[in-house]
Image (cartoon, rainbow, N blue to C red):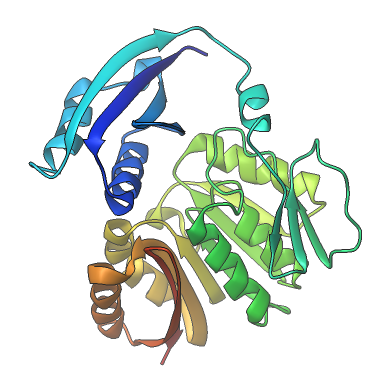
Length: 279
């Protein structure tokens, strides 16, 4: 598969600007990012590259960023080998161990998750995924019916299954993620996770006890009403993928319109995860 690289260089960029830019690039098809000393490289399948869409994203920052970028075609390469160089095992809350297929089994951990991320988001290393996993570890999943929106690798649904969830529906609008969740479920011998490719229109008309949504603020604001319509009374919903200011207050206000009551939130760096209860 042929890829195109966009090499960004910045005279100065704040961490939150870096993260927002990467999130917005992901929305237009970029699926791999590699930090470097003065910026980062972003990769996209060559036939999906749209320079107009790229410039629209950059224009959204106005004069906030002082940058240059260079677009080049790159030779096909073994992408699995590339991420293997940088994928290190991760321990969450001392009892959950996340590893890749090439790492050794560690039976001393209560929950071990094997992830082959390929191009899909979700290895647990990003702060938002870590906080969502902490919420899953802290809350009762036994016999729950769980919806995982923006599932990526399927890591959150897999952990919910290991914590005793009865049924998990994992949805992502990226076909790579859809297939990744299927493959990773098999790697972890999870038989009660159904992976679907789509967005809010793909949510099945069943009642969910728990909803997990690690996406971004704008998509969450658009989809909260859909989540609320399938969440059971007293059911729990966990969000991440946004910042404390100003995003959290926006999420709270919108949730209140759909009878979703704020419970608490976690914060790592600038990123936030939060819990709401219906009713």
